[in-house]
Length: 67
Image (tube, rainbow, N blue to C red; front, side):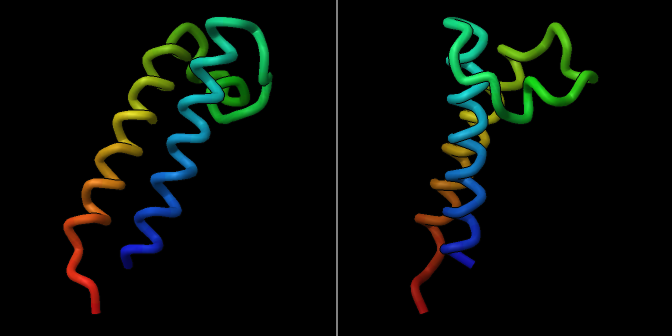
């Protein structure tokens, strides 16, 4: 379970960072925030939320007891 949380945390961090870099610089035109038209106008907020989600997933993974 710990590895699964870390994996999803990494994906969220990757998508959030990529979306934030794209919105601020125009580089890296890939990712969730550029592909979903429902997020138009909210890309920066969604990218920040993905980064916060990633940090929460990493914290949850760390709090799990090792087996």
